Length: 284
Ligand SMILES: [Zn+2]
Image 1 (cartoon, protein in one colour):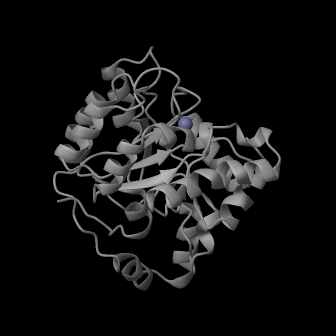
Image 2 (cartoon, protein in one colour; image 1 turned 180 degrees about the horizontal axis):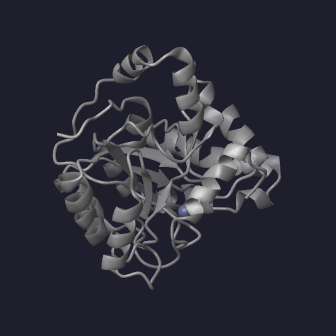
Image 3 (cartoon, helix red, strand yellow; image 1 turned 180 degrees about the vertical axis):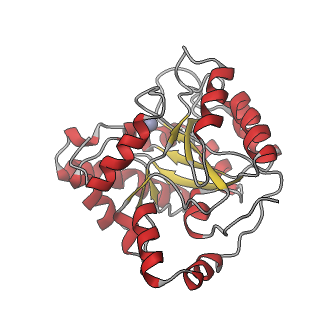
């Protein structure tokens, strides 16, 4: 990965403690029975309860804009630790074989009304018009982009990176009428240029703090669930795939729903709700 700040290094150390799985880690997050409408004023309330300096420190650590909108360029891996919620995220990388769409998984999320965030690559969108339109219509789903052709961004110069990132954003906007402010780099790879471009495009740079490893054929359903339940914490962003490459993704998400949502009370929310609208939940 490219040059990183000390904070980034800290997060990398953190992620090393998580079992390494696949390189292209994509995620999705948990589910909730009834998507609660979350009061957008909660974050403001949190600011009021914390001193200005304490809020600034929290915001820097957790990658949230402390002021007005200048945090878009930060690389975000996790939500606030005070938030008893998690974000299930699902990457839609292009595929050469198969349908490229895990209909059973998406249908399960819809049936159980589990909020989720999908990162769509341009090449995937080009061959899944119906699916993009269907995902866009679900009120508790959020869409972001995942590059145009799923390139290794650090291997490209700045102009080509900008084109790779912006093309998928433009496609989603012009063809599907949907402006998506979230961006996740393919393979989670980036350098300083990537961060600057994402900032200039007004996008939020979303990585993850927990990988599911769902495309890894060596990982059984139970092993994945075991690892996930051990590593997920308040504010976690979990990466899965919904492009058909996840081998046990639907079952794993169903198990997580039982373990994380029903037993531990970690509410699944979209990435934006996790970052901007999460209340300080308490156990009950
Ligand atoms: Zn991907």
